[in-house]
Length: 395
Image 1: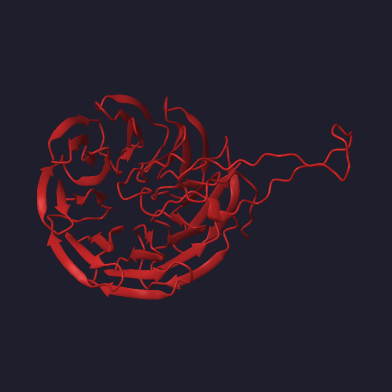
Image 2: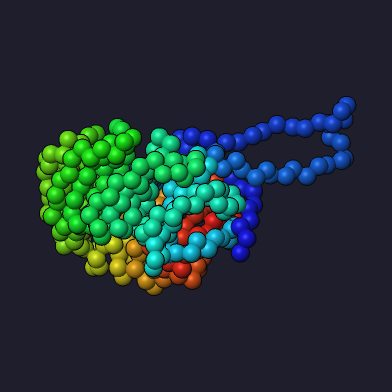
C-alpha cells in the first residue's frame, strides 16, 4: 500500500530529553477572551528530525535496548504506514536525524534503505548485492553495515553513496558493528573480531575468538564484551588484547552492559558479572534464551525459544514476571520505552507489555515472523517481518 502518515507525538531533537510541549493561546485581532467562536487546533505532522535517536543495535553501544527519553504510543495502535521492501527484514532498523535506516535479506541479494519515518517514503536506496541480516550503526554522518557475503560498507547517511567498503572472506557474515573513537569494530560468523579505521577502512587488527559472533558486542570504557556461539563471553580491549573470558551455559546468545555490570545470555542461563569477569549472580529458566538481554536501571529482560519473555531484578537476578502469550519463539530482543516493553515474536505478532507487571496492553498481528528488535520513537513503533514488510504503528 502507499505509505501514509498521521500526526502524533514527537521526541526532543537530540533524543536526550523528554517530549517537546508547546503551550500558548491565540487571539484574533481585537477579539476579546471568552468569545463564543472556537477554532479547531490541528496537530501538525511531527518533524522527523525531532524523533529520539536509535543509532545502533539495541539503541546504544552498551546494548541497553532501553530509551528513557523516546515517546511511545499512548495506548493501542493501528498501522500508520507500511512498506513492502522486497526482502525479509531480519535486521533491526536504526533511526538518526529523521531518517529510518533498514536493510533487507533476499534470496538473490539485499538492499539498504533510508526512509522518512513519518511517511515511509524512500529517501534513498542502495543495492548491496548480498543479504543484510544484521543491524547497521550510524555515526558521524555515515552508516556502517555488514552483509552476509563478508563485506563491511560505509555509506554516506544523507545520500547513500558508498564511502568505502572492505571485503572479508567470502561467506563471513558480518554482525552489527560498534563504532567508537574513530574506529569500527565488527565480529563475524567465522569467529573473527576486526578493528577498522572509520574514515579510511584501514584494518587495525583482527582477533580470533572460538565460535561465531553473530550479534553485536557491547562496548564500555575501552572494552568490548563479545558473545561467542562457542559458549563464551570475551572481554577485549580496544588494542585487541583479551583481558578475560567466561564460559556460559551452552551457546552464547548476547551481551549487554550497564552501570559497570555485564549481562550475558547463554543456553538456559542469564548471568551478571562485574567488568573484570567475576560473577555476581546467575539464574536459569526452563527454556533456551534466544535474545540479547535488554537492561533498564532496575530490570533485565530476555526472550526464550518457547515463546516467553522473562523479567529479572537487575541487582539480584530474581525473576519478577514472565510473559508467555507468544505462540512462537521470541527471537527479537525486547525494547523498553517509558512503562512498556515492545516484543516481537516468530508468531508474527508484536506485543506491548507493561514493564512493572508483565501484562499485555495491546498486540498486533503482522502475518509473518518478527526476528528483529523494534524501534520506538515519535509515538510510533517501527518493525519489520520476514515477508519483507516494514510497519510504522501509531495511535
